[in-house]
Amino acid sequence: MMNFDWNPDTMRWYQAANEYTGFFRKIADIITPKLHGFSTLCDIGCGLGLIDLEFCRHIDHVTCIDINAQAINALNTLIEARHITNIETRLIDCNLISDSWDVIFISFFGSRNLEEFLPRCQKLFAVINTDNDPELYPGKYQRYKKNTVAEAKQYMTEKNISYTLTEIVLEFGQPLLSLTDAENFVRSNSPEITDEELADFLSGNLITTNDTHYPYYLPHTKPIGIFEIEGRG
Image (cartoon, rainbow, N blue to C red; front, side):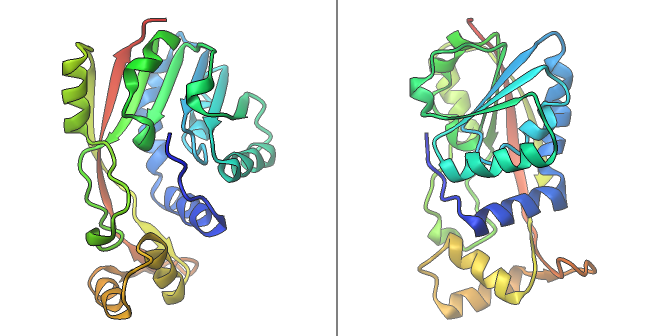
């Protein structure tokens, strides 16, 4: 499982993007009707657990697993602030888990080896990028090659895994506090970017808003696929 670079800035940006666009709420709105009849869910590679804050309102118990202590600590802070009692967090590598759940949820970075989790659930949902276009920073500086819908479909065909697929396009851009915040955001994703490249990128992509708190915004349409797979547990 990939250990994403979570720090106070990346966590703030990610949470702000979700709050501004409703990204994870919209994904949850598609999945939660399919949770009827199930009691337990595990989010493997949960990160900040933003979708789990939605899931926990529709299922009895949610387990959030990640290997990044900063992400887990941030999620614990959100859980305590919202007085949520049915989310459990675990700082553990997914390869070391021995439990089973009714439902397993995997998104983005944790979606390459789906088959190994099927014996641990009755149903598995995987959210995967349709493409690898970063949009929020110059593509030449992309550091992580995420799994794509096409690759996942090929993987499941090779493994003889049946699935249903829902493909949607959601806005998941970045609201920003200032021009300096915008520059810092792009530099955090592309540390080697030159001043000229940064200025050109922001000139062509950054827009102004009427929002007094977030006067700047980097638009980003994110096409994704939501795979639904029957488990073997």
